[in-house]
Amino acid sequence: MSGLREKQKADRERRILQAAVTKFRADGYRAVRIEDLAEMAEVSVGTVYNYYQTKGDILIATVAMEVEEVLTAGEQILRDPPHGVSAALLTLIFSYYDHSLEYLSKEMWRTAMALAIEAPGTPNGRRYFELDQRLAAQVTELVIALQDRGDVRPDLDARAMGTLLFNNLNQMFLEFVRNDAMTLKALRDQVAAQTRPIAQLIAVS
Amino acid sequence: MSGLREKQKADRERRILQAAVTKFRADGYRAVRIEDLAEMAEVSVGTVYNYYQTKGDILIATVAMEVEEVLTAGEQILRDPPHGVSAALLTLIFSYYDHSLEYLSKEMWRTAMALAIEAPGTPNGRRYFELDQRLAAQVTELVIALQDRGDVRPDLDARAMGTLLFNNLNQMFLEFVRNDAMTLKALRDQVAAQTRPIAQLIAVS
DNA sequence: CTATAAAGATGAATGACTTCAACTTTTTTA
DNA sequence: TAAAAAAGTTGAAGTCATTCATCTTTATAG
Image (cartoon, rainbow over all chains, first blue to last red; front, top):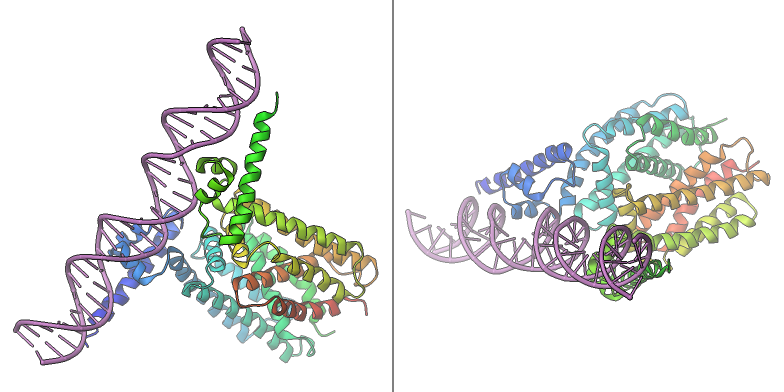
């Protein structure tokens, strides 16, 4: 029970993921072949498939790491949201957006989102979706916090509103990564224009 | 200038698309090989690629036909929307949903959406998103119509609200096709729960 | 310590999309 | 009508993700 095997396994998985992060960023998802990852990680092609079901799963695993960071940043904001419904919502949303391109390219986002849609049954497809759910839950949490604080009408269905706001910001992010020419500023401005009217409507008069 | 060549080209393209509609529905997108389509359309594999850039483009072309129908059905509703903001919005949204599975399976939708995200630069990738835009515009049109009729507050930014509502219904539809177990009724109920509060907020008191 | 079993790594083989150089058909020119 | 040009078709070859029977390494049993 020395755990040698376990240690070797963990190490191989780590090396494969590390190779993926590096190569995908440098050359783009498409251009990277499994063989390239295997070579960099010093394993065989077959071994890559012992750790990840598909090439897409590897990408989603890298995206998941990034989203985890985004969620952590979101928690900070939830601890003490800015005053004003609109400001609080947009601070959270913009923090998502501002983090999004730190490690991942638009191409990587596109591919990952596409994979999560196309292969919802794979473990990492489910994982991506679960991350989405956690982001949506965070937005809902913020709405509830604003309600508790007395900024938002108490009779509002916070869950429905949180989901709606998240669906909007998520869909707008999708449009952003689809369009290489679209700037982060344009994304922010559009979402602000959509979110502010809602904020006004749900705020206590 | 007999147009024989033109006629033959149009006929081949039609035969390929027809084969795609039939085969994709019957066997599923994945299971159908380009060779199968070529065989049914009585052309060679290479010829299929003279008319469509990728296998995915063929699928998107079939989806586009369906969305065109959905848009037409939506126009009917716009001509005389039901009374009440909530009822009008949900009638339009449900008409989208009810049409969606008439010819296409969830798998086909998933694949098409994934492709449109992943390959935004291809002609049919652009085409899919143009259809999305037209659907969003239709929702916006409805909001404006309700405003003109005096059902919705005149000071509301109809464009922002229309986009937001569409983004929500689109994202919920994505969740629906991602999850094979989710029923059309569950989709309707969830979207209704999200749309009604908004409807109430934007309606004239 | 040796033998047996279990777990995991390996890479050649498979299968499907996509490409492309050669071939056919249609159109234009003379 | 015949030759030349243009347009389009063809399917074999190339590429890359994925699989699987075999081999190697690690763990366990005697």
